[in-house]
Length: 332
Image (tube, rainbow, N blue to C red; front, side, top):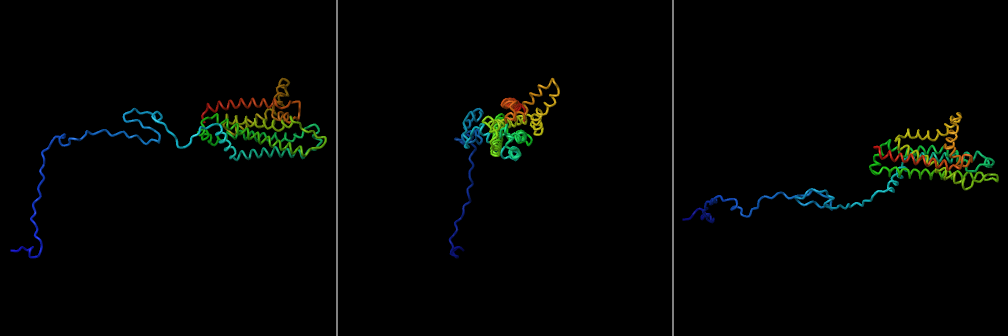
């Protein structure tokens, strides 16, 4: 007897047995089920992200500052700042501000222009008793006002615009900032004024070289160039100290104009009174026009001008000491 599969030529299919159901083991204690299992452990300590070079404290150790547990070496070269950096910063600021260029240009134009005008309008006979350095006197009288104005603006302009905060943030040592400003400004004012006066002396000596012309000696040349340049620069340095104390451009400029002009005007009123005449004479002697005239050797009765220069130096030093004290005491 053949099956249908045999009739069709197919292989017979073996009978399938039903799948056996798994036998469940009886429950056992926890230790018998997992004999090698360990109790749960606490999460290990993971230090936060630290810069390279720091050593993190071990787990369980008391928290300590990073400086106490390790050292850090910056990949960027670090250099301690000093006065030279402050001077470089102040030089960059003073040469990049338009007011500096305009003020010094006007000062040079006044000194050289007035010197040329006076030299061209005088003859050789006018220098029989006066040295040929005389034309620079008139330009120095006007040029000193430009230096006074620039001295105030060097520091008061930063207070007006608020840039002084950025300056003191970059250089927290405030005395260093004021020292750098004073050195840069004094050097710039001295070099510019002295070179302008030397140019006037050179031009005037070339224009008046007759036989009856009084040739200036070394003391007269030194007083008309280096002496006057120092006097005008000290006035500008005094203006910088006043600007640091007042922190207001208009107020500081007005104060310095009074310091320069008042000793020249007030003695005329003091001499009207017999009891105040001596005070008026001394005040007039140490006023700016008389001090410049003494340095130019126009009138020997008022001295050589070095005593007036020394007095101005003392006043400027006292004003700078006060400026340093107030700068450290007051807030920005």
